[in-house]
Length: 89
Image (cartoon, rainbow, N blue to C red; front, side):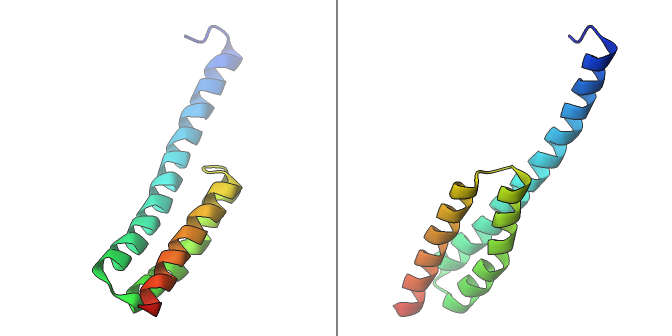
């Protein structure tokens, strides 16, 4: 438990940031899931559209610190590769 006034204030601040980060992380995962669902269904057009919407959300997550920049880049790369393979087939 926090003992000082400053520590109590820090705990409140951390709780607020945790809620915000949870919401951001959940939003990013939702967009990624939309792309994966579209790829799994085999609909190339829907997959392209979902990827187009997901890319800025994933990068925003990296910018806001809920995921590392390289993790975001790798995720986008893998998703776009799957969408591209779907379009070629």
